[in-house]
Image (cartoon, rainbow, N blue to C red; front, side):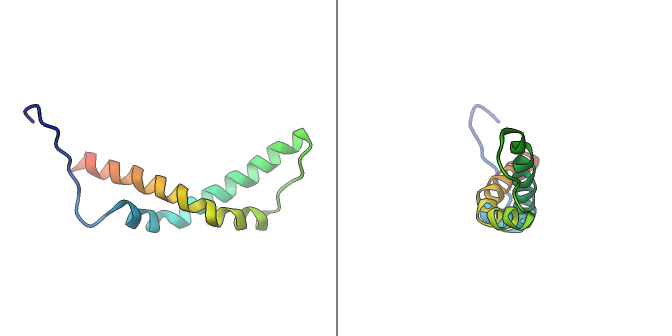
Length: 81
């Protein structure tokens, strides 16, 4: 490149398409992290979070996590191109 900023983008894999693909994994990671955080907070007097409650909370919280993962993967695809 000669002083110009070029942006490459592989066709067909947008951030939201990748986010939809990665949603299950991101939501599972959020659920595990919420459950473990609740276990750690027991040392400060909080009650434990039931696994079903962690899964329920992970549903909506998995959307921004999946978007962030999709954005990260999109960036990696752009660098590889």
